[in-house]
Image (tube, rainbow, N blue to C red):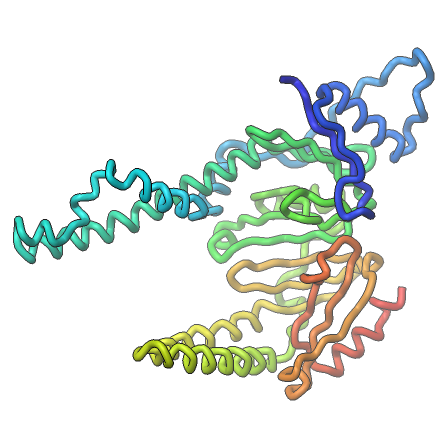
Amino acid sequence: FGVSIARIETGGGGGDEGELNCISRAEADRLRDTIRAYRSGTRTALADGEAEQEEVVAPPIFTMGLGQLLIAGIFNFSLVFLAVIAGSTQYFGGYLPSEYFDADRVVDSYGKQAASLVSAYSILTVAMLLLAVGVITGLARTIAREFGFRLSRTETGLRRERGLFTRTDVVIPLKRVQAGIITTGIVKRLFGWRALAVQSLGSDGATGTHHVVAPLAQQDDLVPILDELDMPIPPPPEAFERVSTRLIWRSWIEDGIALAIITGIAGIFWSSAYLLLLLAIPLAIIPVLQYRAHGYCIADGLLFVRRGFWRPRITILPLIKVQSGTLRQNLVQRLLGIATLAIGTAGASLATPLRVMDLDQGIARALLGSRIFQR
């Protein structure tokens, strides 16, 4: 219908301070450009009769083609629609050709050997169906959200355009950017793929204050975006200071106690509850991998924090953006002499602040009293 919704947010109200429904796209663009021009100081209020300045379309600093969209969709494997399919079978199951899942019918007709083959075929069919649903769902969600992705520079910040069905056009002021977040995955990193988001004072819908500015990119593609943010590519892993090895012991103690309690309660109702103790194997390995993936680095007025083995993540935080520092110790940490340093930034979720986990208590206190929190 040629109309748009314009939302205006200052970052101080926890949401949109202003929203205009069903205005023309031309008027929405004019409003956006006027506000952007005021913020950049390049234009004052237009006098009566003064001609509008034609917007200069800047060349993009990052785009996504169809090939990247397809790769991103495959990596975004999801089974979110599986519940919809399962619920649909309640109403339409009688119309589905599911006879080959009936082992009793096959036994009566062809014997037990054929029934075992049908059972194996059924398991394979279900596995392939889950794989197909996950891939198709990931592709559909990614293409719908990221189609036509274009990131360009404006007078005041970064302009991001994307979307197939719902087209969004967002301007992210650079002054409001608090941190950069580079994420990848255990498979993605084998092919050099990464994603870049910025933490801002404004929200980006369901993603909170994180605005994705590169959903899938190689490291060289991130360089011009980081240059606009005045941030460098993170240093190599060997430049990071590792946290205390007591992180492993803390995880073993906490996870061991939780597993023992769960196994004990399950044993009341289930005679084979002892099988839950097999979970001790991954619970023993995961903390070692977490320790190897976690660390911090302070260089050139920036704090880099990396963590996560399955989904590696590096946060780039200018020290001037640090708002607060909190030292946290639970009972196990106090017994082990370690502490977690939580770093508060404007716009960050109070539930999930930037954290450096399980530092030696003396190092954590030294960092808390350092120049990071004295600016």
